[in-house]
Image (cartoon, rainbow, N blue to C red; front, side):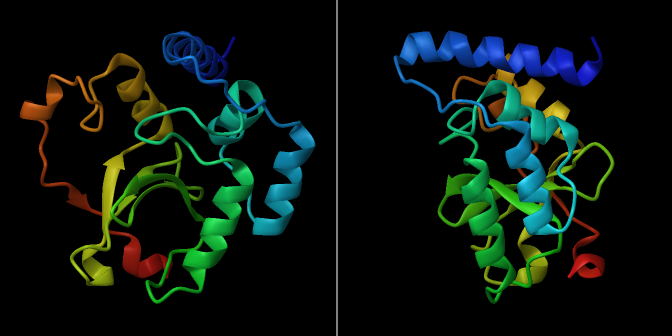
Length: 174
């Protein structure tokens, strides 16, 4: 079992445990053909871990805050953002809505599928993009073990640097 398969299994176990506690059914996983169709629509490949979440665990509905979006909603939101006034970077998918206009995004062109936070509230596109995690794997591990800043019961909340690092690549990607 490789690292991605192991992490997908950990996420699935965590989701099953939380689903039992919450009593909320999850959307069924997608067929692999849906990922290929999505990639054709987008014109770029999805990171294997991100695709695996949708084909092995469920098509959204789990994860921090309101959970990951279903894959079709990811595409719909990405396409809408690309034509918005925010100069949305190519191959940066909004994958979770954190409310107040903030989106958790996955950079499909970065090694490890870097996780970015889009926060339009400052009002300036140059100030709206931050690095949330160097990889999707690390971001998911923070959610599973409850240490990430966005976890309700996180002890890291007091220790977490709430002054996030700006995403330096923003200008080169628009």
